[in-house]
Image 1: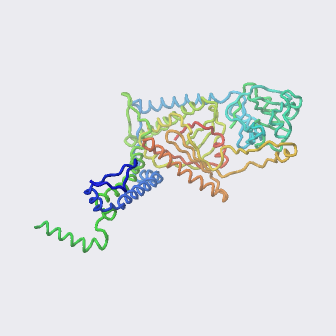
Image 2: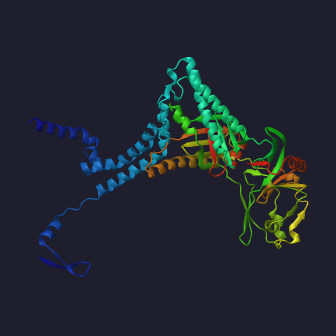
Image 3: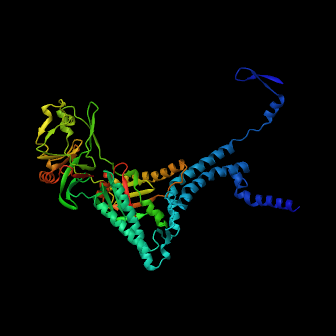
Length: 251
Length: 295
C-alpha cells in the first residue's frame, strides 16, 4: 500500500492507492466515445424521422383508402318485411318534419343579418318587408379610467320586451366619452336627448333597441353601438307588426 | 476441414469484393465499431418511425370506425347486404337507408333547436348549409361543390353512419383566413378637439377572401372554401392558413398519441360556397356551435 500525497478526496483525506490498481490503470486503453455518439446520433435521426412521419401520416391514411376497394353497403332492419320497414320510417320522418315546422313562429317575426346589414320582416314563411339596417360597429372603446365597451350586436333569439313611441335617449357614459365631454351625473338633464332614436323604439332587453336613425346614409353598415337601426318606413312597419313577445332572430 | 475451407473462402471473398465497396467490412461495422453497437444504432434509428407508422397510419386506417359505436342487434332485427337483394328490394333498401339518415338528421336538428343560440345544419343531399336559430332557418346557403375524403366511401355498415349522425356535432376548434370579429380598438378622446378625429366616415363592408376549417366532435372536419378566385393580395394569408391547417391536423394526431389514444381517422367534408355565405356562417357561429348533418 502506498499513500499518494498528491491525491486527496473531498474531505482532504489522502487517497490510498494499490500498486496493482495503479498498474492496471496505466495499462487501460481509453474507451472511444464514437459508439455512444453514434447511438445518440441514431436516436436523433430516428426521432426526426418519427416527427416527420407524424406530419405526413394523414397522407398515408388517405393513400390506404385510395388503394382498397369499397365494400357492399349493409343496414339493420327491424321488420322482416322491407315494405313495412319503409312505411314505418316514412311515418317517423313525416312526424319529425311536422315537429320541425311547428318551430316556425305563427305570427310576425324579424330576422336581422349583421354580416351584410339587412333585415327581413316575416309572417310565417312569407317575407313582408326587407331592407337595410345598421348594426354593431365592433369598436372596442377604452376610456382613460380603464373602463371599456365593445359595440357589437348580440346574436341569437330575442323577444320584443317593450314598444316605445317617441323614445327619448338616455345617453350612457360612453356617449360622452366618445365626444371628449366630461361624464355628467346619472340623472343629469344633459343625459336625455329626444328625436335621435326616430319615431319608435322596440326593446330587446339589456339596453339593446331597434330604433330609427338620423344617419340614413350609414344604413347597411356596421356603425352602431349594438342597437339595430332602421329606416323610418321600415321602422314603422316593424313597430306596427311586431307585438311584445314577438321573436327577433339575429345572426 | 470443410469449415476451415469455407472460412478461408469467405475471408478471400470479403477481401476481394466487400472491402473495396464497403470499406469497413459489414453494415453493422459501418454504423459502429462492433456488431452490438451497430444493432443498437439500427434500433434507435428505425424503432421510433416504425412505431409511429403503426400507431398513426396502420391502426387508424385498419379501423376507421374505432370512434363510432357499433350497433348490437336485437332478436327481431337483421342485417342485410344491399348488393345481395333483388332489384326491387334493393331500391326499397336504398330508400330505407335514405329515410333512416333523414330521421337521424331531423332528430339532431330538433336537439339543436332546444337552445336559443345559433346552430348549423348541413344537408349534403339538398346541397345546403343552413344557419338555424331555435329551429328556424334564418339563412340558407347553396353549396356549389362538395367533396368527401376516401374513408367515407369505405364505410360499409350504414348503421354506424346513422348512429354517428344521430347526435349533435359540437364545434371544438376553428381556423380561418379572416378574424372572427373585426374588432377595432380605440381610445376615448381627451377633449372635443381629439373627438373630431375619433369619428371617421365608415367605409363599405370589406370583402375579404374567406377560407375556414371547422373541427367538430366525433372526428368531423368541415372545410369551407370560396368559389370566387383568390385575390393576389390574399395569397400570403391563404398560405399561412394552409400551413396552420396541416400543422393542426398533425398536432391533433400528436395530442391523441400523447394521451395514449389511437389517432382518429376524421371524416373531412370540403364545401365550396360564395364568400358572403361563408362569412355569414363563420361570424354567426358561437364558440361551442352545434351542427346537424345529413350525409
